Image 1: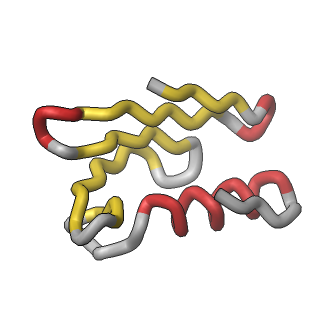
Image 2 (image 1 turned 120 degrees about the horizontal axis):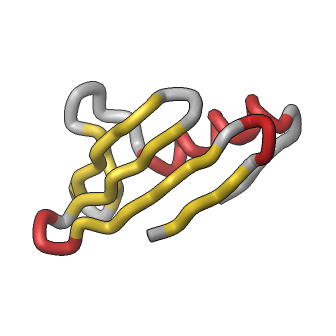
Image 3 (image 1 turned 60 degrees about the horizontal axis):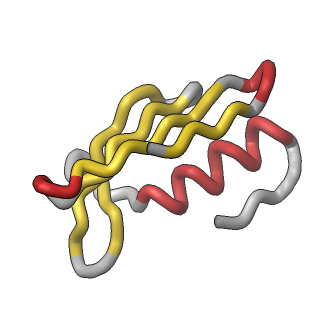
Length: 69
């Protein structure tokens, strides 16, 4: 499990679900999301976005500066 606190901006929690080949992410912006491993990428099955892209965009927006992951 990984917990990333951004102070007043909130906290991200990422939790690996190895038996299901999933990562669960709780975001202060988008809420809880479950990602599946598809073709070597972590993808949300409902709309097809990638976990790293969403994490980069959300954190950049919260802190007002570019964030790379």
